Length: 452
Image (cartoon, rainbow, N blue to C red):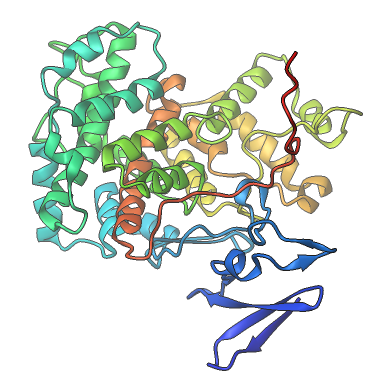
């Protein structure tokens, strides 16, 4: 395939040669140097062409399991450079947002609308969050009917949909209507933390603690989690900063599994709440949202003496015949071929949090030793297996007393911001169509039915 040529109108193109036929494929250039082959016309332009003496059935399609090399959309929300360990929200480097101590809700508005809010915009949205933080009392029947050991992610996915039924106008919002969309976004962002806290209280057998309109986003969540009758929980500024940072670092990450799910479901014109409920379900999978749980379990096994750091490292390096190579939870990333920039920020935050709270966590010592040994091991360096965000996020959540079964749910609270932004971008795109991947059929060809 030739590339880098210019067509008659001056646009870059690539040439695909199929036997005696050539097909021009335009190139789409992103603002950060990414280049994509535009194959939107490929199937139509190759329909009926002869290849090895046979006509191409229906036209040529591409084959890319897991969509590792396929762009499903053009987006101006989040940029990732995996080779150099760069993550930006709307052009702002994640490290800069963290260093300037931007709050989570400010980050959410940045993702959704493209700019950091002015003080007036921030205050206006904060008032909306307060206005919509209460769940309809009818939702109490939903929580009361749940078994005490119910999966928090399943509760969250169902409750997000259920809560929207009490506001039918939200199920038919026009994403171009600024007022109705802003109200829907505020309701989702505000109520997701209430639902999360209520899920925890249900599992613990504790009475529900209602939101406090005088508190900010993170303080209010921790209050609903940990306050009990006649004993109010007051989060420290250190805990609030740590939770804000956690939510910011998880707010968006380009077209990952759950985000792609939100956009795909939304492409059918499904409403915002149903689309995000689908994204929550996608995030619940252990290969996506549950990685920090796996990290914590690994560190606990080492602490209990059930496994050693050296033994763990060697088990990853030495592949047993006939078995897949063992993975090291918290190391490596499908996108990053360098140190995950979020992990760098979180590692420092964990150090500061434990020091300020005067917590001596043996798991952190184990994590540090494990990272040090992996960092100086040639096998892991050649394989680009650096710590990712999950390696330290579990320790941070553990330090502020978030139980392990809530870890993925905490991820979801932060990611709701990005899901809202991505759903809206898909909904406002005039060229968007319902997403419908193709397949390469490898089953039996047409055959008759033999009747007795």
